[in-house]
Length: 395
Ligand code: GTR
Image (cartoon, rainbow, N blue to C red; front, side, top):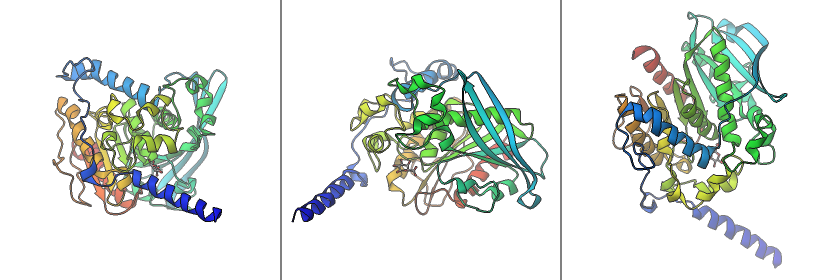
């Protein structure tokens, strides 16, 4: 009898929690987005100069304080150690380099392990794709015994790009009890601050250290690096790209809540849901906005606007309602305002494009792939076309 009651209660709780998330467009609440081009004091931003000198830094600070946490700028030193090199990897198509990037601060160090394939054919330096890998390490197997569409390295190399990846666990292990054991060991003060960096910030920080390495590797054209992240990795890639203007292209794949999707729409995953499930991703201040999105001084269109004038590509998947495809597209549309200051053309239509109809020839690119939440060969094919367009065809 008691057992029956407990089973009933468990089902009831699961059911009501699942019901709490909205998947109906008609139930999206009315909302007002903060203006990309209006300062907190109400001053309008009319040109590049006031965007770059005033509004952009203001938005960055708002995201640091209220969402992702501070991005520590200082370390004592950085070293790069090539731990393995295979000149004829991928049947001669590429040179493999495995590199340990070590950051030192206050006599403490943290390692980020980079796997990098550089095509042997084209002239050096070559443009590159960097993936923040939030899935199993096998997805970026340096031996290529395991191959995965999550990181189709052969396809990327065959298209004339170097392809690289690091795993999020090096920067911050992805649990609430262990995220402190990566690069946050160098920045213990962050753990005590309400606006302190947590896991997503740490992953973004690590992407920038890889960029430091690229700048030192003569085979890589560091001015042509596309940063890719999927889902939680896509949130980190967007934040890294917003911060670090050395990333020439930013690709936010199925990044959803606190990635590309607008929080105020409360469609699919919400701020409360993400904070409750992943308390170690965003800073402590962000918890104040649980069920209180209207009080946020930012929304995610402002994160995308920070990438301007560099090309940005956002994706959704048709069955991935949790990540709010429509809300991600509206967010991208709103970010256009910053691109307009630079007169960077956009081919975005007012309504989201049909499924599997990518928008490539545009500073703001997008596709909604048919299928589930994932990073697939289809997605990568479009990333490559987007990079081809911006790095070679469109000058
Ligand atoms: C989900 C989470 C999403 C997304 C996803 C993923 O559980 O709610 O925000 O990050 O994980 O990373 O695949």
